Amino acid sequence: MLPWLAAETQTIEKLNSAKKRFEPAHPSHYNGSRNNQLKRLFTARRDFLAVWRKVDYSERISVSNLIGRQVTVVNSPEHIKYVVATRHENFERKSPQMRRALEFLLGDGLFISDGETWKNRRPLVSDIVHKHRVPAFGDIMKNTSLELIERWTALGEGAPVNALYEMAGLTAEIIARSVFGTDIGEESAGQVTDGFTSYQDLIDSINIGYFLGFDEGLPALRTPSLRRSVKRIHTIIDRVIEDHLAGKGDDNSMVELLVRRQKKNPELKLDVVALRNEAATIFMAGHETTAATLTWAWYLLSNAPWIEEAVHAEIEAVCGSNVPTVADVPNLKMCTAVIEETLRLYPPVPILARQAKEADKVGDTDVKKASLIMIVPWLLHRTPSLFKDPDLFKPERFLERRPTPYSYIPFAAGPRICPGLQFGLTEAILCLAVLAQRFKLRVPKDHKVEPQCRLTLRPRGGLPVTLHRR
Image (tube, rainbow, N blue to C red):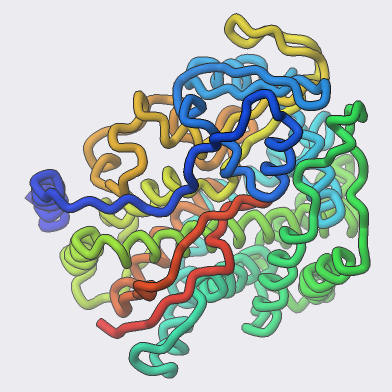
């Protein structure tokens, strides 16, 4: 038996026999009156995770009306498949809330576009971030992680840092080098991180106008503070695009592939604005989701040292003293399981909301035209009938068997599944392995970790940790 396979088998046996448990932070169930929908709406405006009742964590379809607008929550794999795959064309549109919240930042980028724009650009972006291209970016992921290790080493034993900002800086640099073929530097990476943090705090993720009868919602109020947040992000992205177009970028970067494709297929209409929108979409989605995942992974490992020990043992069995590489990722089963369990517990985008183009029927539920369909990975991944001990951190569940189809959707599902799935998953696994080989991160015992859902799912206020050399 191969050493890494023997180690995996022993790991499963050891973890299954262990009686240690860790229940990570999650909000209490909503106990407000079901009839007071206005209060629930404003609770959701503050934090989407705080509005779910105990009964919502079950396989079912539930319907409610908020100020006259039908809202249908679909939390059954069978019916989720119907919405995102079988009837994809009727439910392809992202919700007005998501479109309006992100259009100022991303324009008509793939994440929030639909119709012909989505149909034309989806194959293009999918090809650029296809899994077969991921190995080409493996060295960028590894080397950028090693640079972070050098900086952490210089800070000294026990140095305090904010893991969210550290991971955001790491993934912003990786995506910049991959997408644009250029370095952006620590200061610019921090500017993007701060800008998006501010943007999430300021943007209205509910869009009251939609519930008041405007089927497309109302444009977000572009306050001076919101404009400053967007400008901080766009300044960095515009600069690196301009540098690239001026010949200063890497010929193998994702943007270069976009430019070449536009020259070959002018009908794509990828002008400079469209190019910026797609690059911004890849950049923001690519760095934010992986940064959040890695941050949550450090929190989980800090509180489950028996899992952390298994991770370290696997890295040693697979890599020895060598730095983990992208070629090692298929054999890093425990590292993969940790990331997958992290994505189950803390999906980066915990609410997947769609808008019905036409009236439809989901199961026995009649869905009205322009109504809101909500698929909530946060609920789905914590449904007891789909995942045993759903609130516990148990990565070994992913070593034993795969989840039921459409029960585990951290990257969405169906035709609108995240095109960067393999890139982001590989990046998270490899960065975790490279950093965990050299460091342990510890969350202070007196720090209360609180999940907060705005546009993405982050620890409220970030995640303070101390750094410890291995």
